[in-house]
Amino acid sequence: MERQTQWLRGVLDLAVLALLAESGEDYGYTLVRRLDEAGLPGMKPGTLYPLLNRLDSEGLVRSEWRAGAGGPGRKFFLLTEQGRAVLAEQGPLWTEFAKNATAVLERGMSS
Image 1 (cartoon, rainbow, N blue to C red):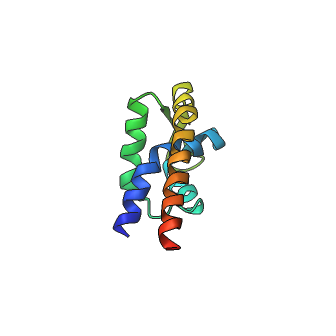
Image 2: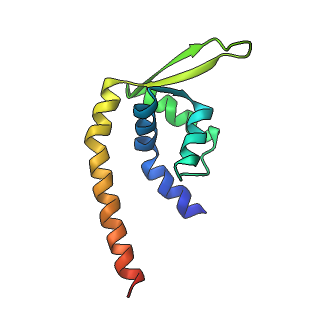
């Protein structure tokens, strides 16, 4: 499981940006659930929230508190234009990297 955690760390920034691009906005708990549903399981809020705060400080996402309907408020995260630009630039690079890594693994497994 340790290796899978390392793989997740490698793609997590871009995955979160991509999920926010799809939804427009989300809060941490929902992002954890969506990562799990997308086949990227094992994300803990204690890992995700520092990442979201870092992305916020880098200007890739912005956050805002909203009052809850009869419950506690939630901190929502929204993709910024800068975040969208990073996703557009880095997403294809990651996709190419993953494709090349998959090709190497498939060759090795079939040998």
